Structure formats: C-alpha cells, structure tokens
Length: 181
Length: 240
Image 1 (cartoon, rainbow over the protein chains, first blue to last red):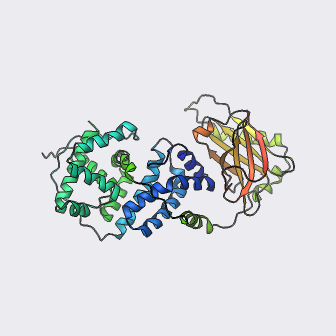
Image 2: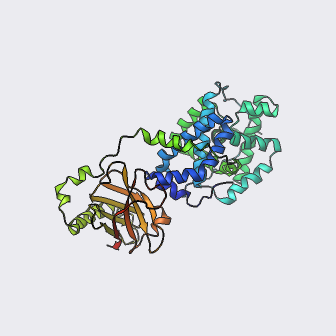
Image 3: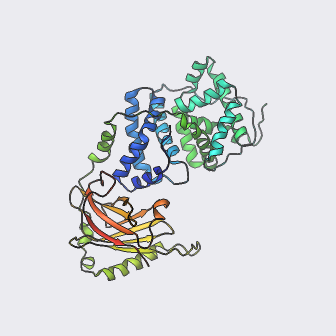
C-alpha cells in the first residue's frame, strides 16, 4: 500500500519551514513505505535502519527543494530513499567491471518527454513491460525494486554478464519505443 | 539491426540514462554520469523521463514498520547538536526606532517596504490579487508582529516588532477560519523577519477575515498538531 498522497505535499512544505511537528507527521505517514524501500534494496535490517535515518535527515534538509506538481510527493520521497540505499549498496560492492562495451543496439529516434508522470503513462509502463519476454521484464523490475547489478541479474538468470547487459539494454530500448510511440 | 547515424550518441545516452536510474552502473560510472547530468540538459531530461516512468514501480515496495526508536534517533541527529535557541528578537527588539513606533506607523513602513520588494517585474503582469495585512497582538502580551500576505505568490511575510519566546520555547503561527481547527503555518524561525510560502491549499483559505494567531509552544512546535500554549498574539487579516 502507498501512503495517501493527500496532505503529504503540505507536510513537506511545512517541514521546509522547520516545523518539527509537520516533520514528525510526515515521518509517521511515510516511514513504513520508505523503510520498505531501504530494506528491500539493502536486505540487511541493521543497514536499512541506518539508511532510514539518513534518508529522513536528507528529507529534512532537502524539503525546500520539493516543488509541488513536479512529481508526486510519494515518488519524490521514495526516490530519496531508493537513491540513498543504492549509494550504500554501491559503496559496499567490489569495484565493478567497466560497463563501457561496444554493443550492437537496435536504434530508433529518441523522443523523451520531460513531462511529469501522470496516471495513464504510469499504467503504460506495465503494458509495455508485458510486451517483453517475462524474464526480461522481470529483470527490469527487479533492477529497480531490488537494486540488483548486472552481475547479480546475470547470476540470477543464469546467463553470462555480457548477455545480461545486451538483454537489458535492448529491453530498455524496446520499452522506450513502446512508451514514446 | 545496427544504426550508427547522428542519433547514435543520443540513443546510447537514452539507454545509459535508464541504466543510471535503475542503478545498474558501477560506482565509478554512476559518479561520472552524475557529473555529466549536471552539465547536459538533454541527458538530464532523459534521466527525468526514466525516473518518471519507472516511478510506476514504486507500488512494488511493501510497507514495513521501522523500529519505534528510529524517529528519536533521527531527531537526536538533527536537533541535539544544535546550539540552544537564541532570543528570537534580540537584535530587532533593541532597535529603538521599532520599539517605540506606533503600530500604524510601523504598518505603513512595512507596507511600503514589503510591497516594493514583492511587486513583480513590470514585464510579468499578474492579476491584481488583493494583498492582506494583519497586525498581531494580544492584551497582556509583549508580542507584536505584522503579517503581509501576497495571494498571487502565496507568500506570507512576517515582521516581528517585539517579544521573544524564551529559552526552550518557540512561536508557532496558525491560520484560523471561523470555527475550524487552527491550521499550523509553521514554527517561526529565530529571525526578525520570516517569509513563508504557503501551499496552495492553505493559501486559498487565507482571505480577508481570516485570523492569524501565534501560540507559545515547546521548541520544535506543538507536539499535538494543535495549539497547546497560550496565544500570545493574534489579528484578523484585512485587505490592503
């Protein structure tokens, strides 16, 4: 379940004014969601607990940067938790292999939209994922939700690292073509 | 199929932006991308695009209650190291020109100053939204403040004329409409002036006749979300 977005923007705005009551209410309404994010990506509870503290300290410090209407307030908060968890994950991983590699990639004209998400577009990504092979759609989802690296995805799917890269990159191009016809 | 035309680079960037948002890049590559995004608006747009699309997955994160002590630790890390509260109006209160000024005189001064600062540039005309002003005071209280509200920008500006909350206390500002519950507009910063941009939902409720009130609360604000301390100043908003 996702916390009700209504009122969350106001709590972020009041937090930006240094209102500790609003900050506590924001925590009460969103911490289970954000702890879920930290725990899913970091796996270890102790690590996730420390990450959650860091995340709310960042929210306190950055609340003035949130622009109403730019993104849903929940997405904004989840992005802070997710990015921070991924940073911690990257820091504890051994140096990864160089990702630059010349791969044959099907190419089409890019047409990225700058617009903020709306409900229809958000539903559309599921439709577009459904057009990919199930294991490839699963790889995209679990990269986002579990923070898995190429190496971890390759191991999980039992394919060589380069194959996983090619898979995923091609999947991302198809996804974009589907999302931006 | 391979195509290496003039779009080749952009396509690579499009995929790299998606990889970046998914978190697939190594620490070094991730840091390099972060630096590139800061200087490359087209790449930043690609990243924003993917963030927006992938945020649809956010529902996949299940809620898990954090340990009960977590918030206390967050508060301690944020607030424990802070120096004790300064006297809110120490400097301001010492200005003799303000101290003795009649409210009406001060009001005019604030209006002249405030409106000149607030008035938008002539090239960006805005519909004439009526500014509101409120003089906040209460019998038996030293606290006096002036509030000026610019509805076109949702900006509420406060100027403290006298009064301070004292050690371990804070002034909290409330909006009261008729018989509704007071809505917190925030804990006032320890400064002689404060500028508060109200969320549109709250800003719409601040009209002529609305009452602005200041209550004395524990440092950090009312623990209940409603005023708990005495109201040390209040006043109705009137159109300028």
